[in-house]
Amino acid sequence: MARVETEPDQETRDRSFGRVHIIEPKSDHTHTALMLHGRGSNGEEFAEEILESKLSDGCSLYEKLPGCRWVFPSSGTLWSAAFQEDIPAWFEAHSLTDITERQDLQASGIKDSVNYIIGIINDEASRLDGNTHRLVLGGISQGGAVALWTLLCQRNSAIRPGAVVVASTWLPFAGNIERALAGWQAPDSLQEAESDAFVEQMMAVKTSRGMDDGGQDSRRLPPVFIGHGIDDAYVDVTLGRQAAHVLSQAGLQVEWKEYSGAELEGHWFKVPEEIDDIHRFLARVG
Image (cartoon, rainbow, N blue to C red):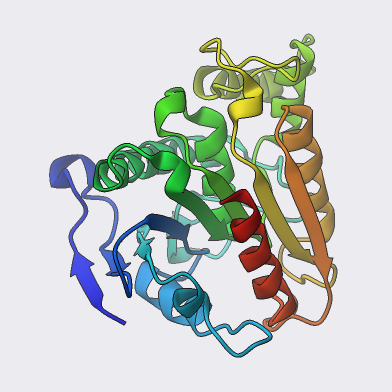
């Protein structure tokens, strides 16, 4: 595989993020996969792990998709209040037992990461001559959470990805997003009001009745694949189910798959079944 290490574009804006790890396609460039790692990892490590995960026929996704350029950004390093140390992370997640706990700590990191990823999508769109329906956005765990938030916050429908693929993840501010989709009820607390304000400021897809806030038909939103281990010891499967439910409420077409027996205590892709399902999903959506 032809690998390239690059510094992030627009260095002044993105200096808090790490290097972008790129694997060039085996043949002419027709598609791009932009994949986001989980907390504690980086782009290069995630690239090696996911592209070494084989389908049932023994091939990797890299071999199955020869025209795909694989782009693996790296997050910056953030202080974790929960672990009391600096950890590579897209945002600070204080607790995955109660994802509403200290949501205020998540907001700035999510905002910065979403803006950064949208910038990379813009760069990759130019390589695809503006055909972003040929771009797949994905990630695992915290990277998957940022991928889902990027989708919900992307106001320019012309550069939305053609598909989203995430695994072992959750949707930060899920309850507040549900409130937004329902038309906002009076908040029960100051914390809820602050979280509502953050979601209202960020989110572009705001109704399940068919239109986003740019007047775009929500049926043009990309299909979403979400895979999750029922025995995931780090991100409980109920959080993945909640993410799938909320995205469906927002008018997205969601394919939800559950697995058992994946490595890393259920917090990884189930090989080969989940890799097979991802390949079939991508083949179906083109």
